[in-house]
Image (tube, rainbow, N blue to C red; front, side, top):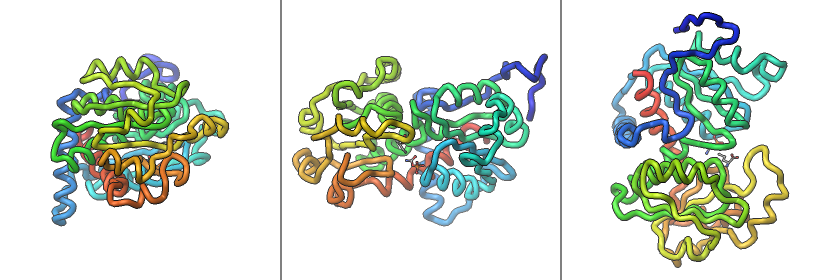
Length: 312
Ligand code: CP
Ligand code: NVA
């Protein structure tokens, strides 16, 4: 599994495997393939058909932040594929005691067939990817959440029987989930509006990446205009893990309510966990318009398809 380097104590791996640090690390064609494969895995699972395509494979999971869905869906997915996952949570490794990321990356590469990494700083996962000689999958960083974006687009594909003429509005913080969602919508050809309060928009570089792979997102700070005529309204917490709470004050008036969804005749999506009463009301997330449980389950199906794409 290890690739010898001339100076293994310092050298990054020169032969990079396919990493997925954000969704556009996949080609548009592979992106669609992963969604189609995910739908197949979902059907096979429902029919009770075994699909052990990664026997004796191990996924190493290195997480600096808490997780409910991402951990559970990766571990369950590896079990269903006939493999195994090893979870290393916050404080479980020597990283907290000074072992460098590049050493950790090379050591883990010697055991695991792929790594799923959740870090704060996106540069940390880039370092791990530079030194790992197995595929690295981003399980969320401060900048991106590609596995969530794949699940979100699978949910849209299932709900609308494809992507033709589907329009979505992201309302709230221009955060990690929003960034990957905007790029994924472009890859799917979905008409996407990103509405954020002033000062909380997506980085220009993200918008450029979206425009490079499909229709550019529309950007606005007008909540009402964004949600007036769309098929899906998606939001996320106003304060992400590791961020300063004071940011919350900038989002007054940005709550997704049942009235907003009714007026637009829109479905509701949220990656979860949600802060009910802040970015979404309890009534909206519990309403018939809410796709959040399907969206959460779809993490399992897309990650299985992604791992098989990278490993099988
Ligand atoms: N949506 C998501 O990534 O959830 P977790 O933080 O629970 O993994
Ligand atoms: N934006 C949120 C997503 C959690 C799944 C965060 O990064 O905390």
